[in-house]
Length: 117
Picture 1 (tube, rainbow, N blue to C red):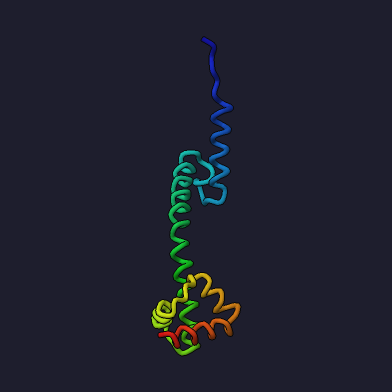
Picture 2: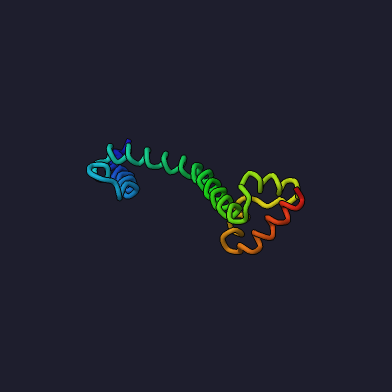
């Protein structure tokens, strides 16, 4: 059997790994073993935080809706209850966007929801 030299393959794999850990501190971007550990952790954090971001966005939308609702004299929970009673089906992302970009329309929507309650 012919002799197989794997230097090129290992070097490419190591370089790919080191490019993934480019911004790390100390030996985490220079040494292959330490860089591999750092890469595993960072990819794991990235995976979980992509899911966590969805909850963060929902919390932000609710905060914005609550602030805009209180300007119109109603709390967030009362607004959601009133909207449900009025049959207004807008999601939180749309409501938050409306509260910031078009406060007049948001105020009209609040009045409509409160009347129907």
